[in-house]
Image (cartoon, rainbow, N blue to C red; front, side, top):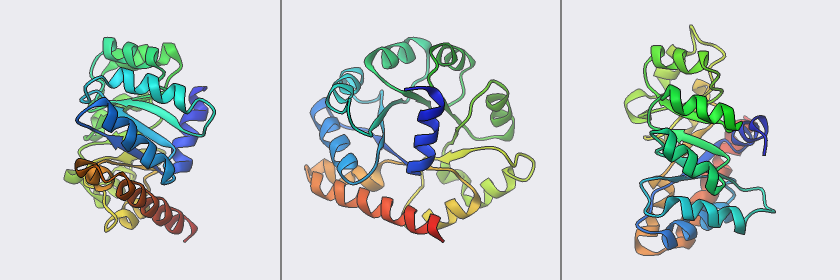
Length: 214
């Protein structure tokens, strides 16, 4: 899948499900529940034991579907290589790493780095990054996005952390192109309630569609 297609897909979805799980089996079930709930963009973080294997398995299971599978918590080139080799079609990091960006650029894979300051965002944009993860979103907030978009009107931000149904409207009103959501959707998996994960995903997807329709 080409880079532009992946970025466009994330923007169309408006949401990336950020999956942190206790083991591979749980991660696979959470990913399936999120997908069944309407979320096409799935991020498997490398804090998950066996993350590469989860990505590889999802790539096999959903090869003919609309799911796009990314790797999260990628902090160095070896991890990026492992993720892409397993089938990841986008790479997300907690911070901006020029070496990871260079590698992903060579592989024609979108790199979505975490940035917080305007300086970090400008460095990422200058390197060719298209979508920037605003992290931690909980410390920023929608008003921060509005302030940043003053001098950087073309910036494409995806806040992660601190995104909930209660503030979803405010985030999109501030101008973000998508949101990254983890525990607000995946928490029921801790008690093996994957149907509840699916239902939470459905609610987020429905709410985003409603917000975008005005």
